[in-house]
Length: 377
Image 1 (cartoon, rainbow, N blue to C red):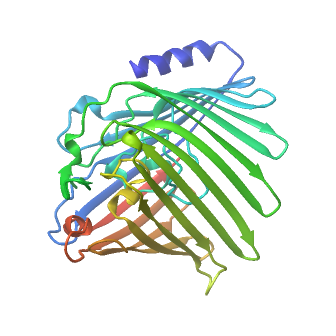
Image 2: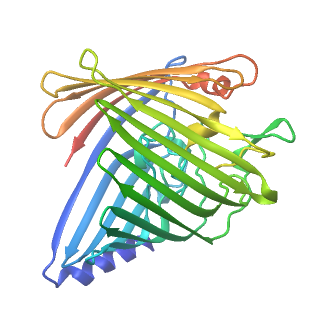
């Protein structure tokens, strides 16, 4: 059905004086377990195709992914992640269709970025690669130094959980874990929100509101978010807080502090400290980026550097669980650009279990090494 919609849209504009463009990549990875050297059988997104069809002030955009998930129905290999129309009036932009919408100022782990559910098969990927597209209407208005984003969505809003790495949901009241794969059924419903941003010389501030439902328990939840980005000399500071009110007046807060430092030995360094402060919540709600759900408090330190005229890129990180049970993860990624179109990479992720009850105890056996070749077009 989705394919028919896209084909119909292309045929509709085919007779008009329009402009067509495309881009994407072909990704060929091999991912194996560091302990057993066997294939991890994690899903592979081996083709990403972006299509853009423009006419006057209207764009049709889509993102189609070809995925291989071991043992699934062959008819479910094509994932229409996004397809939507964008209209550009004088005051901003209006989009309608299946889309991914991002809020917040921090990199990757944004507590205020809760419009789209997440695909936990790609929980350690970056940016929008982890998100699931939803049917929505979004409008962005610009006025002087103000930017206002209004969103109304109608969908199921379900996380996609990882069958290879079972994700467990901690219930405070029962002091026990439950399998998230047994989450309740989600019916289509409406969610809505608004995000206000104001730009200044060295700072940006934002206030947001979202009326939504929890992604684990399908219960109503409201969020009030605040964001601040401030640049001082060669430092950049990003602060985000999301205050939630759930059913039965349960309250909790998610927050992050991100600091980007001046170059040291030509390395760019970023630190993120984030976590959840529980006021009176009786369980962990499935809202926010996946890493927020792993532990109460965590710290991430990442470094990156470019070598040989942008030919080699080196990225390193350490993720440490400051909450119960501790545990940590370290990783290294090396990207080598062969030419303008081809890039090879090696990625090592190693998890170390903690003491007592820790989410890293379950992740330790999933330490892996991934070798890949990517062709960009």
